[in-house]
Length: 73
Image (cartoon, rainbow, N blue to C red; front, side, top):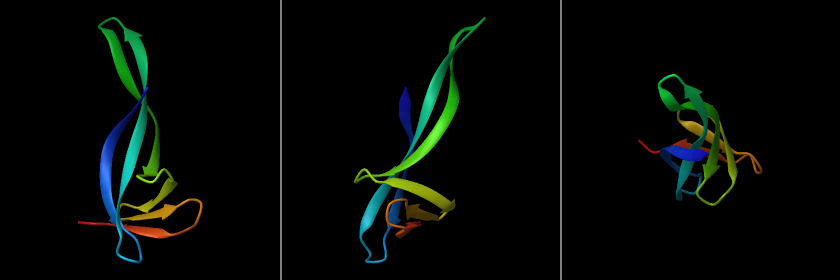
């Protein structure tokens, strides 16, 4: 199961505003206390469906094009 754990508003070089979604897989684990969800792999995706990589906390790059996106604060 995968869930959105963060939405990050960003802007491109033209000033267009987009949203980067951070997804995380949650893996169920059975313990003595019952069923718990453990954190798994994370990925970033633009609201347009393109894969994104994080350069630093405020900078992202679209994987397919190399276009830089900056976090809106």
